[in-house]
Length: 165
Image 1 (cartoon, rainbow, N blue to C red):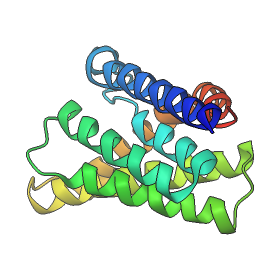
Image 2 (tube, rainbow, N blue to C red):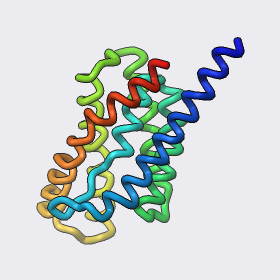
Image 3 (cartoon, helix red, strand yellow):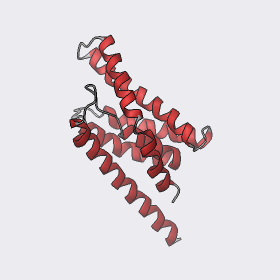
Image 4 (cartoon, rainbow, N blue to C red):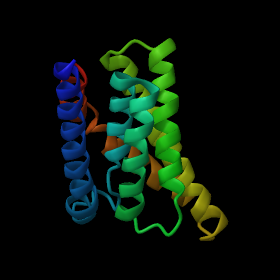
C-alpha cells in the first residue's frame, strides 16, 4: 500500500514541477519571444495531457492549479481561466475515461479543441469589453493557434511518461 502512495506522491510532485516550469515559460520566456505578435499557449496543452492520462479527477485538479497560474501569467483580475482550465480538465478527462483512446491522435485533437476554446474566450472579452474588430481577432487567434501547435508533441511525451508511472 505504501508503494502506491509513494508513486502517487511522486506523480503529484512531477506534475507540480512541470506546471511551474510551464508557467515560467508562459509568463517569462514566451512573453518576450513573440512570433508575429503572439505568444503561444502551452498551459492548456498540459491540462489536456494530464486529463487524458489521469482522467477527469486528475485533469480537473491539474486544471484548477493551471488555471490559477494562467490567470496570473496573463494578469487577469477575474478567475475566468481558473474556471475554464478546471472545466477543460474535467471534460477532457471524462472523454478520455469513456470515449477517447489515450494516444497521440486523441491528444492532438483535444489540444487543438482546447486552443480554439481558449482563443474564443480571449476573443469574446476583447469583442465585448475591448471594442476590437473580429477580423483582427481572428487573424491573431489563427497565428496563436499555429504557434501553440508547435508545442503539442514536446509536451505529450513528458506528460505521458509521468502519467504512465
